[in-house]
Image (tube, rainbow over the protein chains, first blue to last red):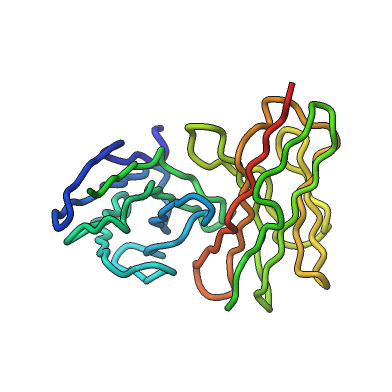
Length: 112
Length: 113
């Protein structure tokens, strides 16, 4: 039981490049989330998926797209990376009974 | 704008001192409240949560929090901190609107041995 896994752990992109961050959970959770963490700003919600086949915007969705591929996997795509997207990205999932979020280890992304 | 605020950016304490970290939110209606901890280099872990009932909730590692509805507050407390409590602490609210969660900006706690 790995919990929530994320790949890659680190990534450096040049401005304008694209990439996809992968997230998977093996806890049979319905809801999955993508956050970015920046110093002094806590975690800000980018997108979430309350169930397979649905996605909703969070606080800071601009510049990102998501795909809920199946119940296990929720990917985050940067189509044209910008330096403002330099951040640590966390994926999380929750069980509806407890609303406790289980976080992945994070992806540290630098855009130059 | 609706938000979650944490009063202290950085708190420095000596071991055995008492801790209280403030958290206020601005959402009306029914909310669920959480405190998460992030140890250096690690991901966030749940410390405790409040859904309903007794407004004083106990969590792991000796932490507790008190929900005061009239003050829209959910302050975190620990009677005696240890060096191993050095971490960043985040207050979070599940808003009344769907599955949306909002986190506060975090409070960094440094405990001196």
